[in-house]
Length: 413
Length: 166
Image 1 (tube, rainbow over the protein chains, first blue to last red):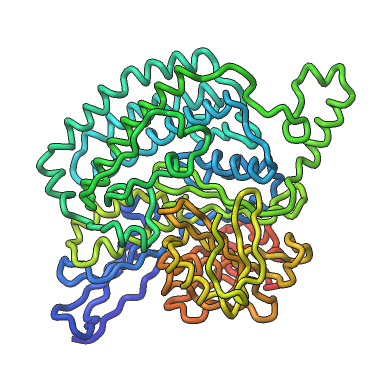
Image 2 (image 1 turned 120 degrees about the horizontal axis):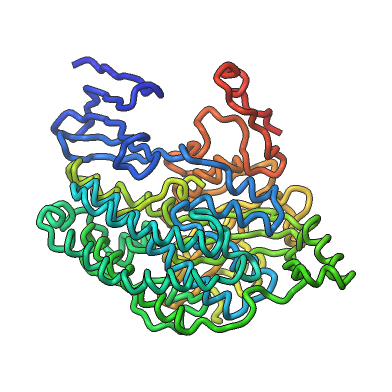
């Protein structure tokens, strides 16, 4: 049979190459272009898949469709302006991105946010983790044929977006956590809404579990699918639920604690299944643990300021500007030039819903960063995709992409 | 804090900055050094990237323009180490570490894409984030930040041409 290759063009969504025979393989290999606008690829992920019948023989992820040059933009902005850009790479967990950046800047400048700010950061991080896992649960459920769960998940995520709006004014890109503290203190209404949310959440998580955990169709699609052993997970650099689903209890909140996570009473969610089902169970457990942490964080949130008392880093309060010349000078300097961390570089990693979300910053002693690098969990986890799916059926592939939980904005930055 | 066990002539410099341990390794010894560090328990590469020290070096001894940064982690001993490798401007090449740390594969493609550093021995050194026909390496400090005009379709021929490589 003649090689009838159809060149991929932007107009043809799916490109098929016939007759591409490979040495040592029995059947005829079919190269299928999967995405970048496929509903089950979680965004604009393109996968070039070689199929032998329905069996996967090769997977090549093609990324970059959502590249927005965030790292380049950060170099053109002042240190405190960069927070707004960090919201936008992993668009399902903005406060956690803010946190990684804020902690890195604070580490370089040698300051630490006050206790109340730490508590608020924990609350926002856990709310974000729940929101991120809910989106994952809903969309993965749809892909595996469980249509109902999506609406339940969005119902609860909507409450988290309301909480975001109440605390920061924005529903998604909050820019709430900033170097030196947080944007503003939480309002009494925020705590009312949060209490109601925490009260209701355990029952709602039970509802998701009733829908999926013992669901025979869901189990058939995920049990034993997408195996990733602990050794391979480490070798391929996987983090987050990917590595915890392979039996490795590694969670940055416990193993490299920040914001006082070591003082809360919670457990690292681990499962030994190494398959898609284990990764599902890990995320369900993490939802429960996050609610546990939230309860404690609200109960013992200390009173006090939410920002460091450093006029060289954060502007003075409004009322001081009317009486103090010094305050006016600080205000002017901060909003025209900004602050300058000492020369050097630091790396800080926090645990996001997807794994290790790190921020590496390099300062040359000026008011703009020399280099900001985001270590995104999606970018690294996606490289394990081929390993998990070789030899599996194309239908399993959907489950494997789903439980890898990549966010392409995070991956392409 | 125990010392990293590497041959003395491999480590050019070492230190701690804001609590982060780091060592500088000569470019020719970097591949061996990474392999030795992996054998000593630094089993995961967290990320690998490049810093462009054009005009003003951050570090006093950053004589070369490009600095490759490898962040390694030892999960058992809860220890992290940053390995710096300096790469000169007139010969921007390094040896690929993808055979030691699997995640280096994409990270090196990204570094090639963004900084134009080529990695010897890399299996598929192509652009990863930018389009394949892109000209220039956007994260270099001499690449303008506002280099791309708005892409109206009637200007198709114009916006396909990226700013000239500096």
